[in-house]
Length: 308
Image 1 (cartoon, rainbow, N blue to C red):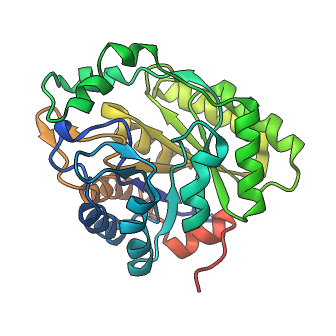
Image 2 (image 1 turned 180 degrees about the horizontal axis):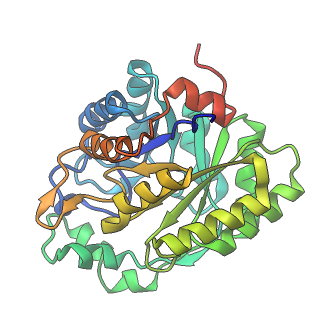
Image 3 (image 1 turned 180 degrees about the vertical axis):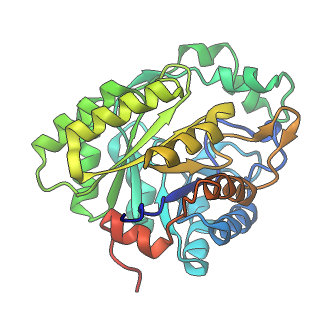
C-alpha cells in the first residue's frame, strides 16, 4: 500500500488579534520574531506565517520598516517557506504594499467579509486588565461593531496584483460560503496559480466552528469545487487549535499551529514558544505515524520554485 504523503505544517508566529497582555511569550519585537521563527522551523514547521507588530507596544502594523527588521533575516537563516499576512489596509494596494517589496513565497488573501467577534478572544482567556491602552480599546465596546470588509472588487484586485508579481496566494476562508466566492474568482482568472492553496480558519465568532463535522463539510465542499488542484490547510483558534490540527492531520489535510492562533496549552498553562506548539503537534501526529513535510517537499507539493 502506498504511504500517505507527509503533512505540511504552518507555524503562525504572531498575529493581529491576540495581544501582549495575554502572554509574555507572544513574540512582538523583531528579535523575538527571529528567535521564535528559527526555533519553530528547527522543530519542524515547513511554512512560517507572519504579521508585523510595533515593537514598542505590540500593536499590529503593516509598516514596511518593521517588516524589514525581521523578515529578511529569517529568510536568510532558515529554509522555511515565508508566508506574509496581507490583511491590513483599506485597499488592495495598501494590503499588498509590504509583500510587493519583500516578495514572500506566499501572501494571504481573505476571501469574504464577516462579523468578526474578536472581543471573545479576551473573554475566553478571562483577560480584563491590559498592559496597553490600545488593547483595552481593541477589545472594548467598539469591537462589537467590527465587520471585516473583503469585497468582490478587493479580492479580485489582490488576486490580479499577486498574479502579476508571481507571488503565490493562500486563500483564507472563514466559512463555507467563502469557498464559493473563491471559485467565482478563479473561474474568471484561469491563469491564477495551481494548486489552489486554501486555509480554513475555524473557531472564530462570526465564522464556522471547529467541530469535526464542520471541518469535514468544508473539506468535502473544497474538494468538490477545486478537485486535484487543491492544497488544503486547517486550523482552529483558541482552545480548538490543537484539536483541529489533529483532525486535519488525520483527515489528510495540511495544518497550522502557532502563537497567532492560540496561547494556552491547557487552562492555567501558557505555551512558552511557537516551537513548543510545533513540537506538541508533531508528537501527537507521530503517534499515528503521520510525518511532517520538509520545506523542500512542501515547495514541490505547493507548486513553489525550489530555493536556490
